[in-house]
Image (cartoon, rainbow, N blue to C red; front, top):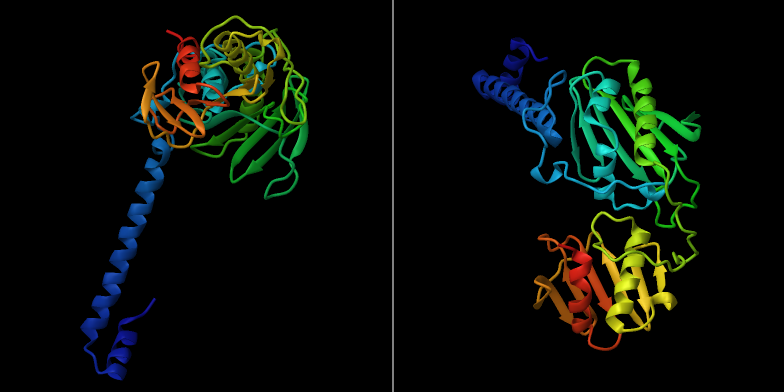
Length: 338
């Protein structure tokens, strides 16, 4: 740090009064102090978190992240949900009381792309991911087992990250067969974080995978075998079930048997040259009309129906020959549900 004598020497060399240099130094200190305060406030408020050791005053961090009623999957279907539905399922796969027993205190939960839970001591996320991590910035994760299943665990920047392979499915097939639980200590660093991660993963696996169907076999191009299912809305269904629902409605709308339909794992179906495709996150819809009361875009490339209030949210897309708008008018109402 510069001393008063240093400032006097500078003033002599530059023929500038010493008070100008002192003022510059003071201004720099104040600016740095202000930046430090701003960064600290930003970090405390980021993501709706609060000071360590305290629960956030506002929760959920965003209104759209609130928990809502959701259909719970069975069997292996937890690996075939959209990210938002999967987050809702993981947050609610076990009762609130069980969350608090495992994490050791009052627990707040919200769901967006992952299930996010906060206690006074821990910050936790749980989500389904496509594959076990192969490496981290600090080397290979350690192999272990959780609930009798292959798992890997790693420590990154004070966060325990535990990934458990629930189902053996080749990566990049569209499924998310790995449960990832990440636990970060919010207060004093504690060795309990790894135990909490394992206990929570075991509880979530039991809650989200009660006895039920297996995932369908997925072909190289994502194709799955046709399967009749009871008609109903698409909301919160596993992706292959959405495909089978689309096949059923295509058959009814076209007036042909659906047993020749070609469903894929990715919530789409093709029948007689016509394709119906669900998207959980679409490009912006620019409405030109309405279909079944929903904003829709009709052009030479097909028909896109906006299913939610968000123009970049969930959509149904129709492509092929014939009157696609009339086809969409028949198919959309039962797929939206009441």
